[in-house]
Length: 308
Image (cartoon, rainbow, N blue to C red; front, side, top):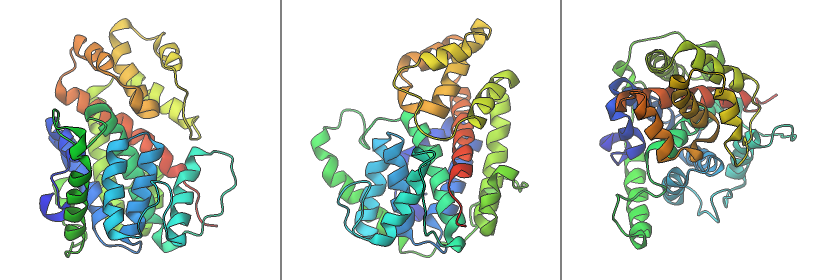
């Protein structure tokens, strides 16, 4: 990770309690964001920054905006660039937050798998970061006034790594080969991205089956199938109503899974503690969150507007 990405990225390292999830997160990040494709690295970082901002994930937004500052045009803010082509990419990926609003993105068809792959990746990682990391990319106890130089250094390290050669598929061996699910058909335009997602999602689905009963997975999946993008609201009343019919021992896990999928920024220590009270280990928490985060990210991937 340090060699290919430039940093030992905490958003990936946080998966360490569940090694298969660690492999899945790194595999998808490497083969979508880092490996050169038909979309530029600057376009990919613009997508990553915009998605992170829309998901209220300041940690990831800061990191990817710093990378874009070095790799692409200087940013005016996290949702605008000084490059019209990148602005179109940002408008395209942000359209998911405005269901029903007409959008006419001029995304080249050959770049769709690359850019959609990065968007789905960040919708996944943002949710994991919101649950397990701080709002800013600094270790606990480090004063916030050190943030600008830290971000500058991280951006330079990521940019230096980006200029190296990265062979497609070098990380695929971390997980077994798998068939591409139908809801990931958008990835078929790039064989490496398709296989990365197929392998990662197979491992994550297996983890979800270990961490969550079938009825909770069905509850999350059914609600995602009816979701067309956008926030669920500032309160958590909706989640309490959804889990009320469940047995008391299942409600903490269901609450966490639903919040990760729909409002990860609302997960607080009390939500995690309730899961621990019903026996959830570190591995279970990571596997549960990974499954819910990827289920939501996969849904978003199917909401991204295809080029007509």
